[in-house]
Structures are given as C-alpha cells and as structure tokens.
Image (cartoon, helix red, strand yellow):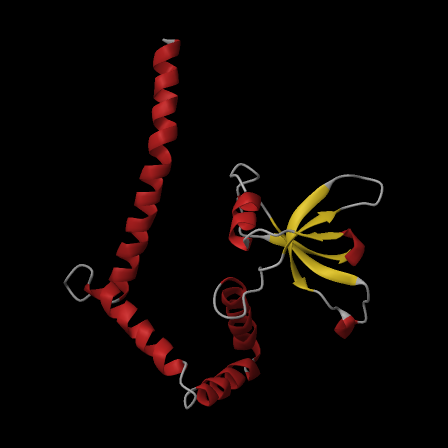
Length: 180
C-alpha cells in the first residue's frame, strides 16, 4: 500500500503542473477568443494579434507619438481615471517595454549585526527628489503572490547580483525552490 501511495503521489507531482498549465493556457486562449467571437475558433485571437501589432507599429511612428502623449495627458487630468491609468501603465512598464523597472537584482543585508539577507530589485538609486541621501528604494516581491513591499535601504547594505532579473524573480516568487 505504501508503494502504491508513493507512486500515486509521484504521478500527481508529474501530472498536476502539466495539466494545470494546459488548463490555464486553454482558458486564457478561450477567453481571449471570446472577446472577438467571430464564429471561427482562433480567428478572434489572430485578429487581436494583428490589431495589436498594427497599433504597435503605428504607435512607434514619430508622427503618432505626439498624439499618444496628448491622449495620455488628457487621461491623467481626469481624477479617478488618472489613478487607474497611471497604475496600470506603471505596472506594464515595470515588466515589459523599454523602461523595465525590475532590472537591477540585489541582495540586501537587513541589519548591521545580522547575516540575514533578502533578495529584491532596486527601483530608484537616487532619492534626492524626496530629500533622502545615501539610500536606495528596493522592492521585495512576495513568494507565490502578486504583491511585495518597498523599503528604503542604506546604500552600504546593497550588493548587486550579476544574474538575469528574470531568474532572480523566478527564484524569489518560487520561495527559493527554483534554482538560480
């Protein structure tokens, strides 16, 4: 019976991540396809990919960029809309695009008299705009969560890590289970 249970758990450990990944991917594809339901499965996604690519191409044009800036300024002036828009834009800018924010992984010594450290990402190296010197802003993502905390840390407690940000993020989010 012990051997049967061990084989069962082993099978579960092998199959569960595969099945859950496929289930999530299929669910997202179905949801995206349903946004533009054209009667032919997959046509909505294809149309959405083409539309986003065309918008990206047109948006990168020097003639269109000023119009985008004007539109963003208008959105930022509307009280409630500005909070939503700027938060979403900052979140997307942090992970993708030319201005990625989580690109400086660091190890932070949490106290002078301790060897305990945390892994995070420097988000601001200069804080003179808020009258703070010799400190940096470090964001610490939480494991298995879409949240984190921002700390203002003395510069002397920061050690930059020469690894790809994506690997450090994966290590943090997995709770240290994945390898660096």
